[in-house]
Each structure stands twice: as structure tokens, then as C-alpha cells.
Amino acid sequence: MGNTGKRMGVGRGRVGACGVALALVVLLVTACDPNVPADPAAIVRASIGSISVTGRTPGTPVELTGPVRRTATADAQGAVVFRDLPAGPGYAVRAEGLERTGLTVETIESSTPSASFYASQRLTAGFQYLTMRDGTTLSAMVYLPPGPGPFPTVVEYSGYDESRPGRNYKDAIIGAGIPLETACALAPYLCTSPFGKGILAAMFDYAVVNVNVRGTGCSGGSFELLTDQFRADGYDVIEAVAAQPWVKDHRVGMVGGSFHGFSQISVASTHPPSLLAITPEVPLKDAIRDLGAPGGMTNTGFARNWTEAVERGAAPYGQGWEQDRVDGGDLVCERNQALHDQRQRLLPRFDTDRYYPDDLAYLDLTAAAASVDVPVFLTASWQDEQVGSAAAGLCDRFVRAPVRRCVFGNGFHGDQNPDMIVEWKAFLDFYVRRERSPIGAVPRLVYPLMMKEISGAAVDLPAQEPFLPDASGGVGAGLDALRRRYEASPGVKVLLDVGDAGADRALSAPASATYAQWPPSGMSIERFALDADGTLTGAGAGPASGGGVGVGRDTAVSFRSSNALAGRLLGDAPAPPGSTTPIRVLTWQRERPGEAVVFVTSPATSDRLLVGPSRADLWIRSSAAGADLAVTISE
Image (cartoon, rainbow, N blue to C red; front, side, top):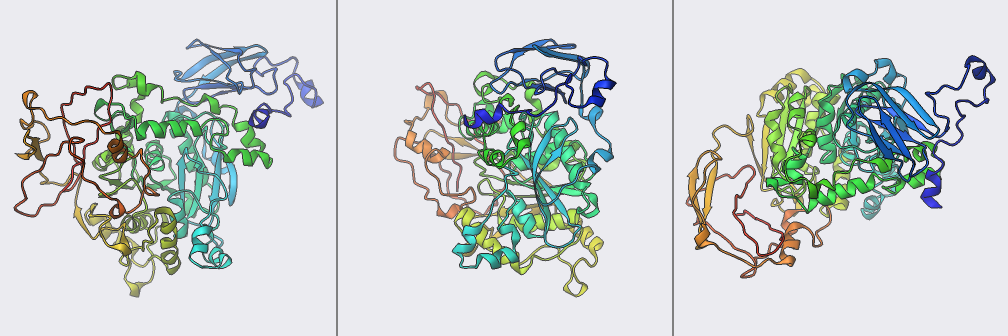
């Protein structure tokens, strides 16, 4: 029966509450405990804002009573999750052969365990599980550098196939003509590779722990995005990892971009005591306003596709690699699939929510950012085709962070830019490793091989690194003085003309500008109006409000929608491999007459530096029920 047969085995081998497997236990209880399910496969778990039930017969009703009364039907896996429950005691669950009373729905604060809960868990190199405060287990993959330790340690936490074992860059090594045995001995992280940015942290001799969020991969529970449960699990992950004997100073950092990036902000807002710093790269700022419905219009492109992919991957065995684990005898992974069909479904709301949904306000990370009280390293790209450029607006929202370093630039969605990497490493050295060291010869050799496989371009790391100790003082000498100089330097760097630095550094920036804050003081906003004759007329600089006259109702311009052009601009057509593919390899074609309208300014009379995101406010009427629209602002 394939997956179905395996999932039906959830909970097998348990002894019923009234069984006689242990005679001593039978003597100590006078009757069947009504709070323990008669069905040995049934598990009822009260968590943060929810109560879950597994082990039921598919299609049978399950009733929740107490402060909230609901009835639900067990899904094909025999599971039910009651969500959005007010915290407090007095809940009960009843179904055929099942009664559990006295259940308490918790908050993050009321459920936070003692330090001994985390210290009791032990992690070693390789694949294993972490236990959360409600008993749910999350799958984790641990990568340790060579040597005895303790090691500076970072965590990656997302809903991708984060903890899947077996990643490697062997093809890149073989393609470069390096003997595999030699490469694996020099750089073991190439042959057993962490997910995402973790591979670079491992390259710089950090221990890396990759964790699948609840309800994804081999992790138990049901998937939720950025909820209190999501945040509490992240807190537990940080504290459990930090408690390990091989973690330097029993404190850790977080790394990663995109999903990993906004996860860090969410987790850091819970203030894990053992969290040293976060490095959210190319995250989103508000999942609704900036991604799901920018400008109030449903994003039927990347936002829908990403949400659909994540929700599909959170289904039972949805990422594929879970089946290999189960086939290999991993009964925990098998049991953990039971609640995956109860995953949070945001996709239907793309079509039903006409206005900003107040119940999803937690998907706006602005408040979470304001709560973060550890050093922060943030990046964003102005032409980010996935999450947009609004994340740059978080830079000045980290008001409680003792240190804020923000690196922005033009370019696509990606966190592998070599100029950003050296800044990222400097930050990690100061606030997680707490030693500052130059990049070694092996990483400088390995990085171009990795980038060749990821993006198709062999990119070198910059020769110059910021804020290294004086060579005469040795590695780590004068760290406090060096860090003070680092913190006194401008906290915002903007990389200019990324992708136009020549073939040897195709993803690099030939120049940069630094600022003390973001937005920069003294920056002016330049506004233009669209005129019917095809000119782009300057309307003067000033605040963001207001506007020029532009094209009016009586002087409208029109064009015929081109599906082929829309597909090329919006990414539906085949694209170059890798999100970090150099911009210079793309072929920008002028639109054919009638398929677009173009407005052009008069030639500039002096040089100007354009920094930051752009926006277009348009009045549009379409003769079709729906059409894709792309606006390109260029020089």
C-alpha cells in the first residue's frame, strides 16, 4: 500500500491503558483511567493555541468542549487539530473509545520549560530528533567541524527539507578534477553538506544544526507559519542546541536567507537566553502587504506558487526523503507523519480575503523586529523577484538590537553574494565565534566550485576583508578594540551595480556606499509623472505623499497584453539556473510596438546616485477580466 500502509502503523506496539503488559502497573491502578485513550494508537496533545488528536478512524467525529466547543472529522491519517484556541484550562476531547479531560492550552510564557529540560537532551553529529515542550519531536541534522570542540555554533530553521541527510557537492569537486578523497579530507562539509547558508558557516569552521520546523520533513506536529507555536519551537531549538557540551560558551547564532531569514526574526522575538545573534538575509517584512497582496492586489505569481509548494511539502511524506528514512527503519519519522495533513492552509485565502486579514497580522514581522534584543545582520536586494525589497525597511525597526548591520544592493533574491559573505562572516566572528580571523586558503578554493554549481559562475571571494586584526598581533588579538571600531563604523552598506563587475566577479559589486542609518539622512525622494506623449516628467523632490498630474482620464495611453512578454518578465518562462545567476547574462529585449507603453525622461545633466527601492502608482483599466502587469524602472 506504499505510504498509506506505512502511515496506518502510527502508534503500533503501544500497550493500552487497561492492558496487563506490566503486572506492577495493574496493581497500582484501581480502574481504567478515563483520561487515557482506550485506543493505544490515540495521542491527545494540548499545545500552544491548539489541541491535536491522532490515532482515530478516518472519517469519524471528534468533539472538543470547554472554553471553546467544536466538532471535527478525523482526516485520512486519523488526525484532527483544533487551532486558534484561547489559552487556559478546562478543555476536553471526546470521540468513540476516547475521552480526555482536564486539558490546558498554553501560551509561550506559561509553557516555557526549565533549563534542565534542554540539558537532558543530547545531540551528536548526524540525523536525530529534538523534543519540544509539548512532546513533539523535530528532525535535526548536526554537522560538526573536525577536532574536539567546543565549536561556535549556528542554527538554520525552516520548512524546507532542512534536516534531510546526504547532501553533497561531489559533482562540483569531480568537475574541477579534484580527487574526491582529497576534497572530503580537506573540506568534509562538501561531502556531507548542510542546507543553505549552513554550508558556508561549516566552511568557516562553525558547527551547524539544521532543523525542520513542526509538520515538515520528519518533524512531528502540523505545519504553521510564524504562529506562536512556530516561535516557541524555535526557542526550544535554540536552548536545546546551546545546552550541548560541544557548543562554545553554550550560546548559538542563527543563519540563513529567505524562509530561514524571516524565521530568525520570529524566533528571536521570543528572547531565547542562549541566542547570541541573528543574520536574516533577504527575508520578507510582511507576508501579506509585501508578498501575498502587494498594493492590495493578490500576487498570483511567486507568492501563490511558494505557498502552494510549502503546503504541499508539509503533507505526509510531502518532501520525498521521509520515505527513505521510514524504509530504513525510522519509526519516529513514520509516526511523525500522522498530523501532517492537518497543516495550516493559507492558500485558499488568496482568493477569499478582499481586505487585510486581522487574524493573520502576526505575518507582519515589524513588531517582531522591534522586540529583537540581540545583534542583527540584515540583507535585502532591490530587485528581489521573490520577497520584494521591503525587508530593507526592517533595518531601522530593530530598535532594541544592540548592533545593527544592514547590507543592501541591486540584484535578485539570494544570499550567496561574495561581498555580502565577507560582511556576514565578520559579523558572525564578532558576535558568535567571538574571535576574528581571515578566510583560509581552503574556503577560498572551495567557494568558486560551489558557486559554479549553484549559479553557473565561478565567483571568487573578495581578497580584502573588513576589520581583520593586525597581522602582527595574531588572530583574535585586540578583539574588543576591533569590535568597538567595527561598531563605530557606518552600519549600512549599499552594494552598487552588482552583476556588472566583469567575468571574474560576476556577482560582486564594483563599488559601494555606506551610511550611518537607513533610510539615509538627507536622502531625497524623486517623483516623476507619466505624460501622454511618452515622456517621464520630473515632478520635483519631496515627501512620499502627493504626486504629479501625469496621464489623465482624457489622455490615456493603451497597449495590448502579451502573454509571452508577461511570462518572460514575471518568471513563468524558463529562467537561467539558480536565483543568483549573474544579471549580466540576461538578455533584456525592447518591447515590440503595441505590447507595452514606455515613458522616458530627458537626458540627465549630472551624475546622480539612485539608492533604494522604487514604486509606481498607476490608474489602470483593463478590457479583460484579468491580466498580468509588469512595471520596469530602469536607466
